[in-house]
Length: 186
Image (cartoon, rainbow, N blue to C red):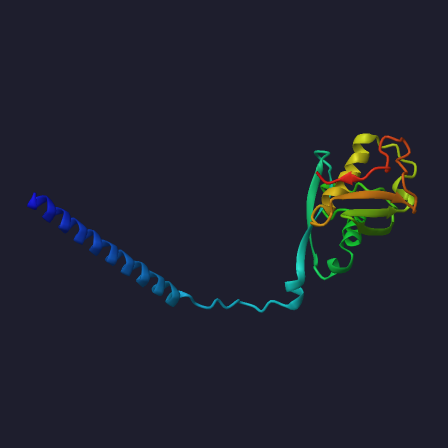
């Protein structure tokens, strides 16, 4: 009986010593980490223009696959402050820089305005957006999805409403896709 008590007492002492040593090592290691932190000095100064740069993603159709593909562009973030919707849509209208991508919005289309109301971007395009086009529902929806996916980068955007020269509820000439509805981001 005395032997068991002695064994238990020695076990408790050893456990206590182990915990104290472990605690001491942890504290010593943390202090050593603080001492090792050194200032990192960049090789070259970062300019104010470089700080303001941001990357936006535009969506165009792939020549090879016929699906929407992203194209990253670096722009001055300051441009996105006032009306990011106009900036992004105008970038879509300019077309892709990558030769493997095709612009979807018809040539000659102009953006009359783009403004957000209740998380929906109301986009007023010129009539070139719909003039003399019989693209079919798939191609027409690809145009809409190109705009939706591009604007989905902006957290406040839930959908878009297409307006043509100030007139609502228009459609593509083949009436496959009508603009009488709001197109929501999925």
